[in-house]
Length: 216
Image 1 (spheres, rainbow, N blue to C red):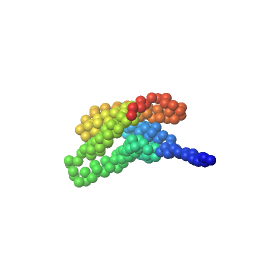
Image 2: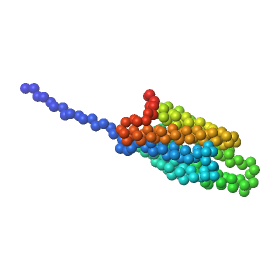
Image 3: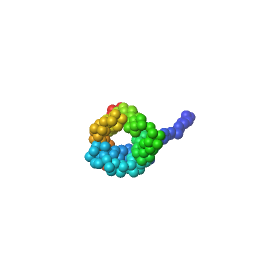
Image 4: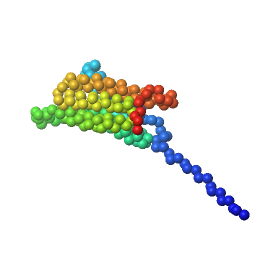
């Protein structure tokens, strides 16, 4: 008499998706970047008097800085290397910007005066700092082509903004620095759009605002 052997059913449990238990931090990071960029560029463009420019510094420390870094850490949780690198880095940019304007720049000028250094030029120091961020932004622009057309737009405008600002500050061309402010405002608008696209996708359960996903 044949004996049948029953093989127990094997169930494969799907591997958990990294970061599936948290909300998408991208819209938050983009909104923080957009708002802070908008305020600064309202002054850089000359639309508002530079006498009020320091109003951006608290925003740079808290919203553009701390909140963006938090968004970057949450992107790490979601295994999003691009988002983590972008948000954490530009969050650090805004914090370092506030620190530079509030403490470092005045300290450099004061030290040069005390030392009698007539060759010191604060624009050179600022220019080097801006150049480093320009190079980083070009790198992120190249990487954004693997994400979406909306982010390509953001980083294309941001790259132009940094190039003009660096050239204007370091080369002593105030009109270029002023023009960078207008490109900065366009960058803020593009970042707000990308943020709104992410938020509305979450609330409506479908893509309301197109972002133009890049073909992989």
